[in-house]
Length: 510
Ligand code: CA
Image (cartoon, rainbow, N blue to C red; front, side, top):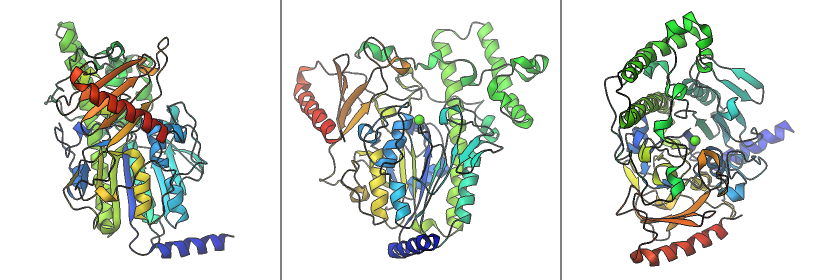
């Protein structure tokens, strides 16, 4: 039996041929485009992520089908919209028996592995040949000393999760069967809340302030009422999620004061945390006591606390991505390996005063997407076409010369990888968010279900349980501040997109 399996694998790998590309899929959680150096308007430096874009392509219009953690991951694996793959929200169960692209690559002779954050409700079975995933905290895992679950059971690793996921990925790459092509997905927890940067980066940015988004003090004047009522305002953040906690001497005097996240750390990790954060927290108390943290000043202070931790986490990610890229260089794998960087969604980093995702507005609807593919993508390519996370599965299958089933909703990206516009490419995309509630009982974050269509210029959003609509001209109003649903000049476009919404929903139902 085993012999025949090996024979089949050997046969298929030789059928794939020497040029079949390897795939390194780098993935993070909640990564906003404005915190990647390669994206226009970026507020920080990410030299290693930027190198992927510089030596390959950056996608300016890469979107999600449903901007929330579990549905995004399911859409990528299946190449399908949420209703068709069954993961419509974070509480949906994962059906691991359904078609997924990594299993197809495995059947065709690839070695496949997923390391890091899986975050689907139901552990992996045979989607990947090897899996080693963050465990605990509802699949979120810990930043420090995380527990991993594999086919062999649970095991804790010492250190910071960003580095451990990289270490495990490098180990797998070094120990793999070098005769076969590979797919390895390194899926990071960072920069998801509660943001604990690696000790190496904890001390950064005390002397700088990051730019505040233009829409930070949005008054939501043209929007549906529930838009301003969601529970995702930065100004409401407090306590441990901003790394606000008692100081080291205070905890020494009264150990009961130690918050759970510090209990998870080793003594040296805790010492590093206190060294970085105690002075910030003492300074905050001083500002508070002197009355300098009121109203808008408080919101702006919280924004800086939030964004600095966010960027420290991104710095840790970029640092580790650099290790993986250097390994590909050193191992002679660069020329025959597709490197993809993406995140499960984008994130509001202060836009509209928020620190969350879920909405169909640009900051969370978009996902970063960078792709290096020597021989296929020219260095420095910018791709403006509308792409979605469901396109990755067919793209990778096509790269491996495997037929893509017609049931897959996504489209292989190869025709647009030159950066030139392709008249046959899709003109609009569907978004559906199902995690909301009813008009009587709002869903998580006090926000409603919604769906919509976006084309290159316009966006229509339907809050269908409230019978409310929004419409934006993204060319004139890229920050989506001016809802034009009542505009007499826009009624033709609105009717057109309403029809497209109906058509796309039917097309992607199954
Ligand atoms: Ca996420």
